[in-house]
Length: 345
Image (tube, rainbow, N blue to C red; front, side, top):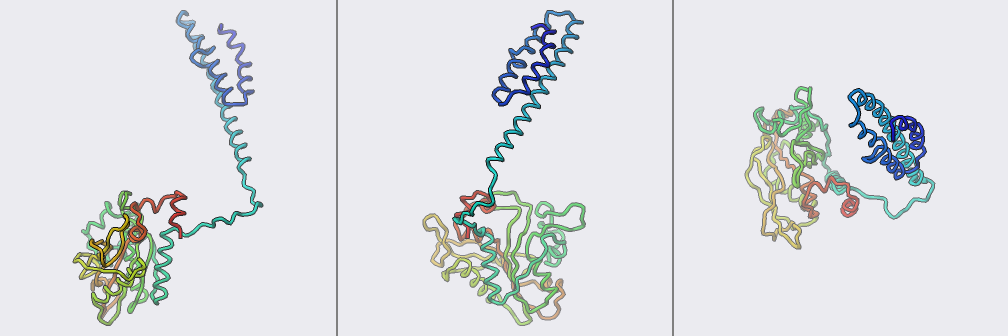
């Protein structure tokens, strides 16, 4: 088709584009005009026989036609998309006056349920349930807990520091709540804290940059021993795993805020592919850390004179996974409704 005729038909073609009512028709018309064998594309091919001066003039005129057509197709496609969305929303509108289905009202997430159980258990036993800020200072998160400046945990490879601040961070442990409680209430004290903690870990089957911790602290002016710690740990594990069949052992370890420090293990066995906590088990399972409160922690909390105490802390996700046979921590943060309904409480 001659260039003059193409320019003459431009207005008609633009009108045709805006009259299209479906994506299929739009693509068909676009192929006829701008496709590989389209009218405008074919006109570009005729330029090869023209002179240099003619090529420049023809190129400018054809590019103008092509640009106006492409703009028209783009506007019409947007118009059709908006129309399609509007019609879909009309069909999917929820009538809030309809009666509500009472089949399901949802439930507590497995982690929320575990936190509520632990909280209620310790409240019933007369413990104080304390909370503290998730954005902490180095003093409460490290210094007061007897963690030296050169300790690896204080490096940015392990800890999330708040940019532009002087030593403000996302707490790496709920032990900071123990310091705040000791400063505010002194001793004697029996307390637990449950909350979110943050560490600079890559997300995989067993690690998460955010997880929950449950910690317990018992301190008094009267002597407290490792025997008291073991007794309290046994009570907690029997309660949490809902069994009296618990066998524990302590392994020597090191934590800056306890002395002596121990790792806590319990006996377990596999049955039908699931881990069972039982004193008849043939394996030992590591649960978490514990120990007698270091004297420096008492001093840093403003406690003077004779002071004795113990503390233990466990990762809540790990305990929940062990109790329910969950092998991947990422499932606890998933939004798959089937998984959530299966484990809801």
